[in-house]
Length: 166
Image 1 (cartoon, rainbow, N blue to C red):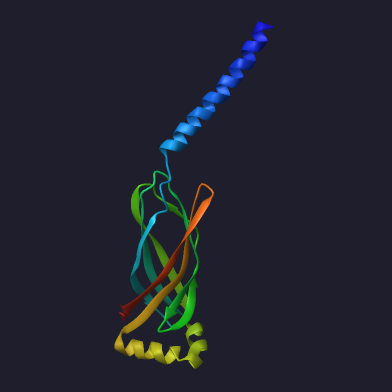
Image 2 (tube, rainbow, N blue to C red; image 1 turned 135 degrees about the vertical axis):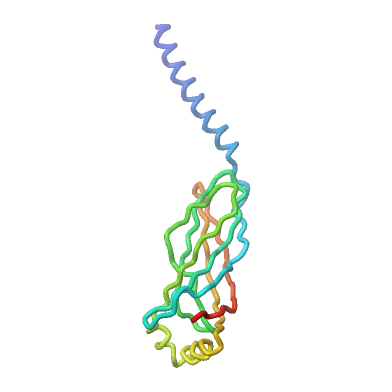
């Protein structure tokens, strides 16, 4: 009888020990706050072809937490000279712990999208920009941060004049 009581007590102590170890780990690896959004910068044309226009920008962050997380970009609008021409969507990015980092925002704009919007003047604006070798590019939307079941969002609204290298 004493042996069975000891076995039951031993299992309870083992469970309590596991719970204590997990609690200490979670308390030491704290999530102080969401990563700090610094800026969207380094907007550049990667290629300008007859069927597509490729752009890239980088979103910069600083994570001060002991735990990483994940960032996702859904429906960030790309606006060139005032007209929406594309949206950025991508896979989730792993956020490193205690580090500054950037995530690439890659954009592929179909050429037919530029010609479709001719009524709004985008084609004329882009052709004018090609002659001037400058264009205004705006990224506008939301980046989502997820960690341990919690989520936060960052509003992105960055406009930059980009030089076109032909």
